[in-house]
Image 1 (tube, helix red, strand yellow):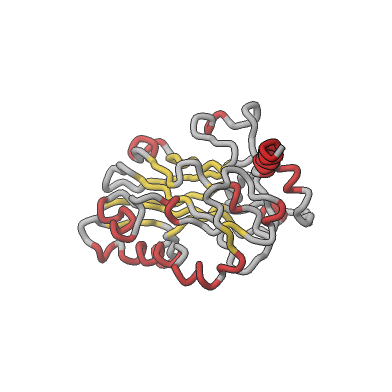
Image 2 (image 1 turned 60 degrees about the vertical axis):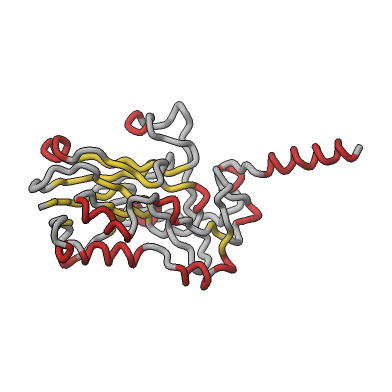
Length: 258
């Protein structure tokens, strides 16, 4: 009898580790729908990149042999990564979600998942100049902080063909490519950290103090030098909208390695 009860509890616990989109969505306060041109911006998260410095007008240009040409970029990346004091200051709102592969549970909505910077890999780190010193720049992507937005998963029947080979069910998939023929021919390999994009467990943002949008590092492994490259990155979820003007779901940036 004791063994039977133990197995029964274990089965219930296992079932409880999974949460569907509909179940979780029903527990989130309804978001107002905004109309008009700005509605696209307010209803769907924009995709942003760093380092994004107004002083260089959107062009990330540097010489890997001269640290002075990329120090501003690496300092900017330093500023967007969560620092140790962040984990201490907001620890009362955070939970460890490393074992959550899907959504976090309804009962966990009064906390948010602490972003684990280990997910960003061992290549795009300060010790290696975020790849700039090797001519392999790491670009950080993040989604806008839209309140109560919950990414909806694709199914095998609805996933776009462009991401079918890299898509995983419980993550906002990121895909970057050259925007023009010159860039397509000279961009080289693109690597993502984490490889499956923005994990669903970090959403929604319910307005708790200290919540941070998760990051994805995009590393350009083999960009040909002395060529201005125009790169477009897009974020994919079933309820994501892509808009070139408002940058919802996508963003473009320019890179040139001297």
